[in-house]
Amino acid sequence: MGQTFAQKALARAAGLPQVAVGQIVTVKPAHLLTHDNTSAIVGKIDKDLAEFGLISQDLPIIVLDHVIPASDEKTATGHAKVRKFVEKYGVKNFFDIGEGICHQVVVEKGFARPGTILVGSDSHTCSYGAVGAFATGIDRTEAAALLLTGETWLKVPPTIKITLRGRFSKGVGAKDLVLRIIGDIGADGADYAAVEFHGEVANLSVEERFTVANMGVEMGAKIAVFPVDAHTIKYLKAAGVARSAYEPIWADKDATYVRELTYDLAQLQPVVACPHKVDNVKPVGDVAGKKIDQCLLGTCTNGRLSDLREAAAVLKGRRVSPKVRLLVLPASRGVYAAATKDGTLLTLAQAGGVVLPPGCGPCLGAHQGILAPGEACLSTSNRNFKGRMGCKDAEIYLASPATVAASALHGVITDPRKELAAGPRSRVARKPRRAVAASSRVGRPVAADLPVGRRAPKGRVASARRGRGRAAPKAAKPARKSARGKARR
Image (tube, rainbow, N blue to C red):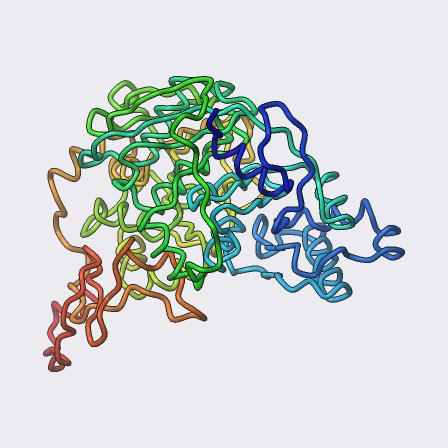
């Protein structure tokens, strides 16, 4: 009998020829992710660490991202404790404030690799299934034990198979797909199950796969995983991960599944998850006209370069409603740099967006964009629970970057297909005279900076609108000064 991805991954990690669903196995994960909660985790084992030490300096990946910069003394004290722990025990993989959201950083720095086991004290660790990793969240006590022992136990999950067909139509994307799935099977429809994506997955970019895998936990899944293909290999190469550094795993053709579903991407439409449950999903037309006070573009679900570009395509040359606050949250320093270089952030800022530092920002409701009683926010984040953004008397709606951008223009929930069909209107600034390379040069190449499967040739730069290489124009002659020109500046 064939084995699923989860069975193969856990069997390999446990050193067993094969495993059965429901079997308990002991594994040694490649890495353990923690973030601001590191201070609470190590606080559980201070005496044990003093006596036995850290099992491995390379095991932990620590990213300060949830409340950055520190918003109060308590948070600052926690951050200081994390820095002291890192220094005392020589933790190799530490990323201080400003580097980005932990899940984006893990991928950009090449820690998430196909076929490996990664666990994290954050439920959205399942994001790394986008590149073929077995990645799942664990609680703080398990994380503390891992720091001392380097191993943990996992139960082999049953698997749900989802087959994808066709391509997205204009104005529809990965966020609409995953919300549609969650709406269909429910927030508990995949409880402790692995979810495998099959079919024409090549029609989804790796960044789109991250959006889908990220929300696997919102349907209750233990993991959500995509097969490794040419797109994955090129994406990882851009992140500095050589093909020889990993051995992909995928399910056997005769593997057994507890449920099978099929989705035709061309038949999907924009959807919105309404308060206060992620599975309260409705077509955008059913909630069109709903007044909103704030829009959030970004987070670990939709804060990558392609997401920001998607919103910028809707907002280019236009201004958001004066009754709406548009918050823009790049997922990492690399994404921030790339979106700055190609003009995406300029477009969003000129449209009225407020750009926040790379981090979790208002998503968890600790700071930056907390809602007031009676307000409504349309967000590209992954959760809309009551009180999620800091106020139990506010409402949170979830949607794609295109839907959020279109809605920000009008101050009410809006179908993005209408705006994309209309195209950009009057410009708010002169068109840049030079195209700017989209890839970041901050450190080594950042995978999120590059279109999937494509690099700009030497001597050419990437088009900010399509990511296609084209020759850089010669330096333009200084423009004549005019009253009109001054006004635009």
